[in-house]
Image (cartoon, rainbow, N blue to C red):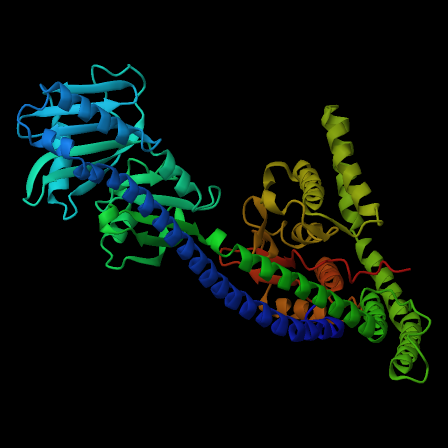
Length: 608
């Protein structure tokens, strides 16, 4: 109904004409805005990253310049070249003063030490101790001294590590520092006199880094040229550099700066990077921006466009409804009245569909006139025919052979006189059920189980009458117990057996009733072991079925079957089937097929 409605078609047409332009505009605007904003955000962050690189380079260059200033001190150079460095009291005082100058030249320098690899000597000073001379250079330092020696700039920055203490230092919780190692060379030769190292607190690095990213929505990292983390805003990445594919991807890149798309389990977005000069340590600054942050502005613009698009569509829908309601409402009223007529209600529910001068008003008047004429014809012809069929049906229902009742009563009386037993009560009960069921004409359709119980009562009385000479079996599937069937549709078939086949049988009289569902039909099969029906007689019975007149040319032999046939035709309007067939082993098979979901009873004469 929705697809066929004129109003709905018009609404859909106008919606499509609105949605396509609005939708296309929103999509095009969104993608154009998204790319534009993405490029703008990337450029702004690249500029920010470059400024951060400049600031970090300046800071590291400043730190690197502190050891270089020692070349300008002749006394320190004499001390470095002396073979008795720690015994000369004057030289010791000079070294102490110079190292203290470097130590306090920058607030974040926490410790300064000099290592003489040639004679395994070590001089250190920190803000927690005075100058200390030692003959124990830790092996862990040798690795970084080697990297310092191999550097073309005679300098190496050791990544973040926990500060190592010595005997003179106050025992406290280790803190993280990074170390700047510098090779002190005997210029103009390439002889290395010693290695000067600065242990620096990362506070300034952290401060500079925090100005380069948004903590809540972005990630920032500083990598050494070897891929070691100098700084990390994500604790999950710290200490897990080996498993970070994006680090390997950046290290293998050739360009000094740039951006690249990156998608992995926990990050989908853009990575921006900028490499510091090798003379300043060659650190790589990396900023990772998720798509959700990168396209946030684009999403906002798209939401505004969608909002205006929805408002526009709402206005179009309201205008469409306003324009179409006066055209389509009368048609809907007419369709509703047609539906009611189809359901049997012949009353027209409207006075007029519009002006008598327009097409819809004329259509409404013509429809009302047509319904009035149809209703008149129904009152004269159809309802009269229904009443006739109702009366015919009630006559057919009342045609139960009184001969059976007389024999049953005689059997009950004889048994009462001879035996004086309680079976009389049971027999009378069965008989009363039969009489009450047959005489109640208020119900025309009954559940199958009710019809079966009536048939059982009938067969029990016959069993009392014939005793061992009668054997019967009733099989009914439980799934069809509540199927509605015409009342007393089985008993006339069984009664036909006792009237025409029981007395001339061979041996014990046998009858079997079976009910089940087959392909949406209720199949009722009654078979006996009588003599059956000749082919000529069977032809006459079928011919008698088709005769609409209530003739008695066939005698009583087929009144019960005719009764069943006519009732099935009335109730199911040709949808049911009654079939008679002689069995090869003797006897007659009567089979009925009744539609289960046909709405049986709609064609019966219940109209008044």
